[in-house]
Image (cartoon, rainbow, N blue to C red):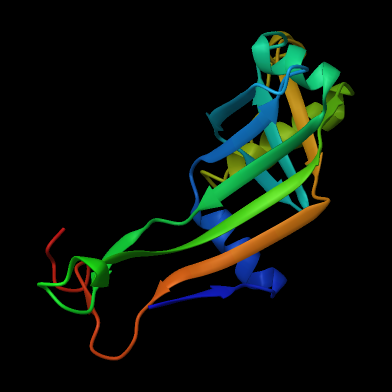
Length: 167
């Protein structure tokens, strides 16, 4: 089984759009790492996230806005030989993005970002109350670097447990 880099923007975006959760990593001023699972939206090379107006992550990013966001498509267990442990592997796609987070403060832009986030999960536009928009912190991450891989690519003769109905 092999691992390949993904270079095509369309394939990278397909992995991102297949995910329901991303993982956001940051480091505080002492270098202590902090990673959060979050829901998200993606559009035109920008990841949108939302949170409370304050908290550990906000305090961390106010001092160091550099963050890393990772995505992994739904993994699938595959194998080449049932008796060889080393022939088992997960098949999936992953994307790792880096950039500097910006906080969106404009009311209309916050509404736009909330709709982008919601479109990741449901194809519907929403209306939001003024207090709801004012009380949410919108994170905007223009992607500076993106790396993507597809791993666990099956060779002829490999077995996918998903295809066999064993999950």
